[in-house]
Image 1: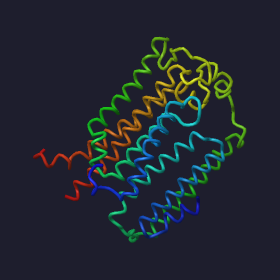
Image 2: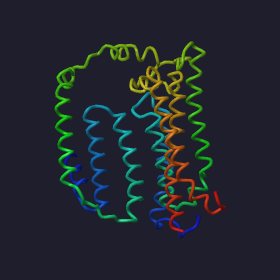
Image 3: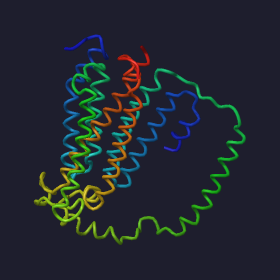
Image 4: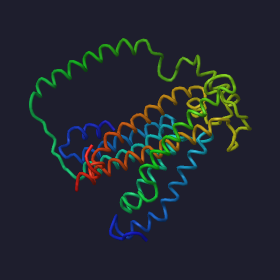
Length: 147
Length: 166
């Protein structure tokens, strides 16, 4: 238990502790199954960001900042963007930009569609952390204005 | 959906207006589901939730009443003129379009027939946006990246004020 004063009441905190992991797991599931079912990197990334926003709304600013700080957020976002570009450049092994070089596998498998799953993971990382960074920046601005 | 949009414009309270905008977004999500686009529906749903959280957090503190004054006759006149011009031009555009539900499938037929074979991805939407048209997705990712960089650069200045000048 961290600082009881910050955030919402005990009921909300208990429910959140049970559900926030499931929300994040669902986001990661949507990112990884982007080539099999509806969804994909963008939607899954936003769900991951929403789980962090949920954590921040319930437990207060400091708890969420301890999990993932602002510098870490912007660094991870750059990693996601560079990874997507790297996947694109990987296509030059096959002859052109964004050429799908890795073996395709058979359809309906989890690791089946070459570079698509890699691009999905990188977009998910980038979108999730980036949107959380936006929310963090807005909240920090609000706090700074109040003081 | 149209009703909620009208409410969002006409209501005086800012928070009620934000809630009505949320209703528009969720109705749009249902519309995507009816038009058989589950990918878009999921994305619309989660982005709408995130935007609503941010908007409500931003508006719940200061409850500004809407300011309606000044040259509203002139504004309404200009708006009506623009609507008339837009409808007049879009009439010619819509005459050229193919009928609803019967698109010209010149490139799309290739994607639909050979998509699974060429990319190994069962979800055809993903195979289009991340394989055939991945260049567009790279551009979209760059736009998002640039906007986040700009936002963090703008919002960083009050955080720095505590340490000293600059």
